[in-house]
Amino acid sequence: MRTIITLPMKPSFREAYLKIERANKHVHDLEGYVREFATSDHCTILIEHDPNGGDDTLKLESTQTIPEDFLLVLGDAIHNLRSALDYGMHAASTVWDEHTKFPFRGETRDELIAAINGGLKQKAPKEVIDIIVDVIQPYKRGNGHALWCLHQLDIEDKHRLLIANTKLMFIQGVSCEDEAGQKFTIPDWLIVPNATPVRRLEGHRNIKITDKGKSALTIIFGDGMPLQGSAILPMLGQMTILVNHAVELMETAFAIANP
Picture 1 (cartoon, rainbow, N blue to C red):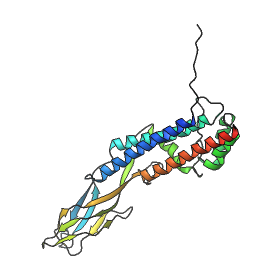
Picture 2: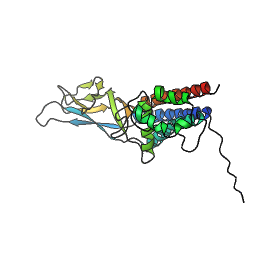
Picture 3: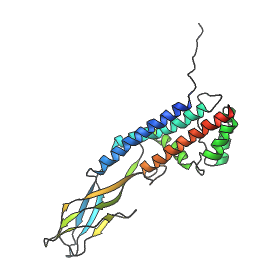
Picture 4: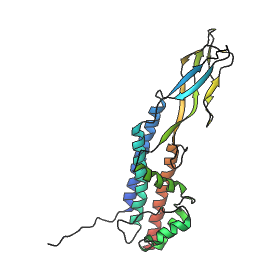
């Protein structure tokens, strides 16, 4: 008995844009997570008394980790953006199969070209290949470095949850009262990067905190991650713009090659 295999329809550029729209929805959800997390009791203010009768010192410590739901949605956003590039590559190819993917091999232009010459060059028009190599530049040292990092993050997310950390920016409105009954509010407390958040309260001893105030924070890619230390939401916004632009460029190049 003869087996008939029906091949799926060729992906369209519209489908690539749908993937980008889906990623945007995830980014919107992440913004909600950040707002909710920022208003939670995510850090504590410790009071250190000088045993020799000196001034008190305040120290900030983080008390909560990033919610797992945030990391799951982050992975979904990254995967949709990465998939949009593959969808665009399929739509911009005249011959396509399961190996037709947007090229990310290598860290330099020459390595990218070598990967494309391995098979993709025979599947997509020259106009499309030239746009990828010379304009999009999806390699570590190219204009598309953020796209290269997107690819690395997508690989990472296939094996474990991505790592994210909080980074305090500032805290304001902290109200205190010292042993003399003097009430005072600490001026805006800017957090210096890579330094322990410590504030010495000159002239005040044995204080108690009457209002913890409000803090502002950002969530960054954690240690060992691509884009380590970069703020996640702004970087996702940049990646979204780059992916959308890359798909637009491939669509235009394909239209020129196939008038």
